[in-house]
Image 1 (cartoon, rainbow, N blue to C red):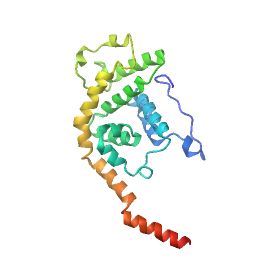
Image 2: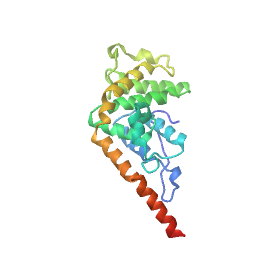
Image 3: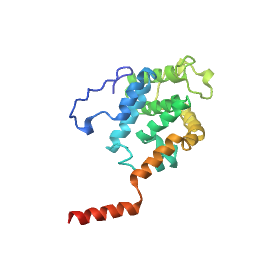
Image 4: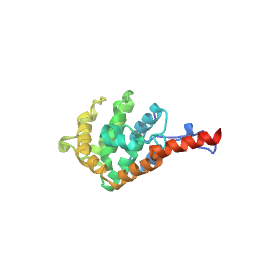
Length: 212
């Protein structure tokens, strides 16, 4: 895993197999690096999810994604496509830093190398928690936070703050997201792509007859 500020990806050449290409979600994250210096931590987390299920989460492959997102915020944050849509919504509400902080903390908890942990901890603090943070999140006890928390980094050092941000999203922005045009449009698109069951059955039957 590259150190903060050293994220590099190999160029994609024409004809490259789809499974080896950088996902659209990763490319979107990379474009955001100029705005959020720690965003690549969130990207790493999203790419790990993508790799773990071995498939893309496009609407054609996962036609029920909107239903899963609506079931819980946890489900939404486990789906890279769901995170992408949620980020789009939070951008409009000027609170995208909340989900980026949550994702960065998820990646941080999986870090084992001591040096990387120290560098990531500092970057998370400077980007989201410092009084001079470029994308400061609103957490309880913010005024008491200082760089002393970076002296002895450990995987769960941001857990309480991450939980606060999760609850803030869950009981505030997440509920509005489910009522937003962005989410409802995505849901309608999935329903249209899926089509009525009877129509699908008829189409399959007609295809079998035609091919016999």
